[in-house]
Length: 207
Image 1 (spheres, rainbow, N blue to C red):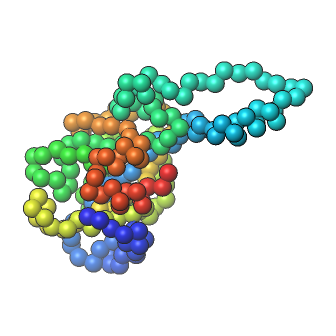
Image 2: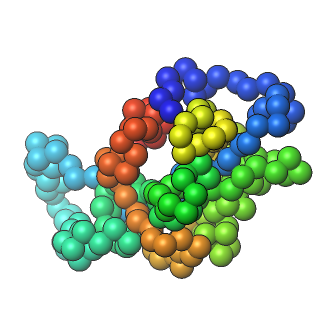
Image 3: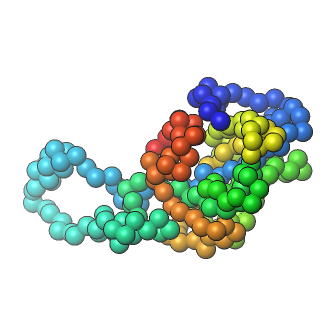
């Protein structure tokens, strides 16, 4: 399942540009919440700005706390944590390519149907988890990366998994469904859930 960075950008030929055969294709969604506070400033830069800002006019304010209760309790079901980082949604349950009856951690996904575009397939996969897409924004029409899953003991046939990026818009809570569990994790935390594919996700997810 390890793929080079070059393979992420390699164009695919065939019908709709995705495949030249009837092999299975899965559309997955990297659903992210963008940072909601400015990353912590370097102490030297902060001191310089404080010194430079002194003058005839000064605004006194108390910034909102950067560390929330969700941070203190490591509540990964909450979007109110790691406010200066990007968070990504992972689901725990049945997944394409996973051993039958064995739940695994995975991204929102759907098996591609040739009657729809791959982007529409990804939207449908995310919608089935959220209920609707009113608080989401899909970034572009093209996949951000893909991996080829080779046959192995628990995966009898190969298939391709394409990743689309979508972002949280104007909300801090979703009613996540159709899974046994879910988490919102940072990039570093995400890699812990996929140790075999860690190098792939390090290259694909730029944050």
